[in-house]
Length: 475
Image 1: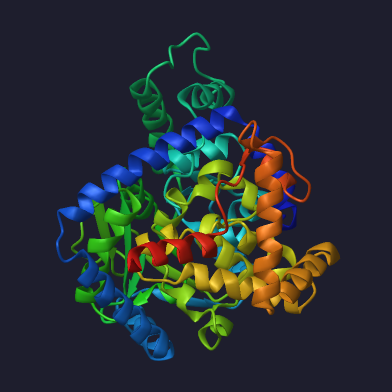
Image 2: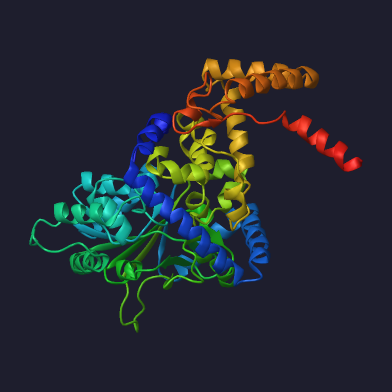
């Protein structure tokens, strides 16, 4: 997927006009928030687990070279192979080579954001290999020829009528008059179609939620079981993942797993948690004959030693996306690349450059919701602010914006002048807007009034009201 994050503003405007998507996203945000709160409330030690998980990941990042080498040793001892890849191109070539060695024509894929990051599907198709997404949400967006809009819920922006249309367009060999009005009918059809894909696939590809150094295991969590079928039925299992997914021990993985499902889907645990440790043994009834782990760096080593290192604690739960008011208004596609929402606003500039992604850190109200729900305690607002500073320092922001910030700074550095100016503006706006109580249009506020009214000020400035309240309390 080629990034086009520089077009965020235009994409966001189009998304705001998509009433169907906005209804779908609004419903998800409301329902998920309530469910997550109930699930978290049933685990009194949730905050303590967040502290433990942060400590685990910080320790791993401090010693990542050691744990990566330990992981490779264990994978090799278990009969598997590790392929080290610095760039997306190297990772795609590694996967293609393994597929060609196996004479593969089709690939069954489990859900993987890293394969989205490297553009693996398009690369395989260009080289004569057909990848089939087997996660239902991923399969739906693949039929629609679009990327996922959310880390854990790829098709969350669609309603069932749109999904039914995708099935009719993609499943041409089925009766066009068949009923597809109910979710169960859609699910039954997807199962029937995908069953053949699992059986016919020459190679299975999955991602990994965790890599366990002490055992050389990879871990995936799913609710559909498609990940298990993708890695056990084909002769070859390829895990495509990134280096920061490492944890030291099985116990550490279990600690973070207690946070993952509660944060991702508001479940206490997902339906399937699958540990893969090498290829099939002589006495195993099923499993792949070969096991490969393709480890991607793609700029993460640079992040390790820098000021954005904390983003590498991310476990891709997607909670920051689901509860973000900006993501909830425009959806994931507006962000223009694989990672959207607050995590995308921090990670994308690191991976594709602030020049390309400079608008993304601006796409935040800084309400703090993302940081409050992050199970790994990533300070997303702080990191977004730092990206804003970098964009300003490198003069990637437009001249008008830079001039406006400079003018604001002129007043902000002079508190008395700033208060005088604010009082004058508020008094003027209160006088102009007193009849209607709001503004439909306002100079220099077009970004706000294009989609909502701006309330007219009532009362004095915040500082004046604060001082007045303090004086009343002192009497």
